[in-house]
Amino acid sequence: MFNRWVRTKPFHSEGRRPAAWYTATPSPTAPNLCGFPGNTSVECPGRHTSTTANGAPTGADNLQQWQQSLIPTARDQPALCVGHVVKVITRHWTVTDACGNSASQDQTITVTDNTVPTFVGFPGNTSVECPGDTSTTANGAPTGADTCSSGTVTHSDSETTGACVGHVVKVITRHWTVTDACGNSASQDQTITVTDNTAQTFANFPANTSVECPGDTSTTANGAPTGADTCRKRHSHS
Image (cartoon, rainbow, N blue to C red; front, side, top):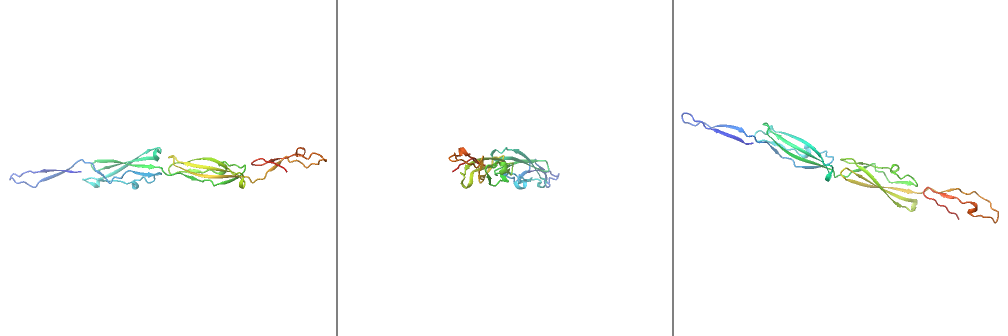
């Protein structure tokens, strides 16, 4: 703010000029925002969007600096995670002096989400005896956690045969993925090994018989059982 000086020069009747008279009138100049903070970007959950963390200006006025007042207001604008932007905070700063003159300026604080979500309670690898339950209910399912939103959990299964090597019938690889609202994701695999260590059983086993020579001793005449197994069926004789 600049001062406008007015000088008055009256003369005495004797012709002598007295000392000049001066009056000062303040001009209606707005105060200034000094040290205005720049726009910033904060990673979600945005706990540090305060003026302490993102800066605050001071006010200056050429007439009476001690009579400045700074009033920040904030407005949140959701960004729907476009470009990983969760929201934009517009902080509107206003400095006002004692005469009601004011100046304003905006600062933007962009809250982003680039952090991948995490699994909670991820299930361990398991082994299931054939034909046991290989579902997520029986073998566990994780939940998702995110610093900014919730995590959506999905899974897909793929199988490889074990060809009964080491009594392994097959191995199920369960691929888990957790995804947050901004599209950040993390994946982890769980394996479910299906084994067969259970002996087969006979069904309809024939009773002992007696055959008069040279009678028929074949399985057709004397009976033949079938085999039952929890994983597959098989029977043979020698």
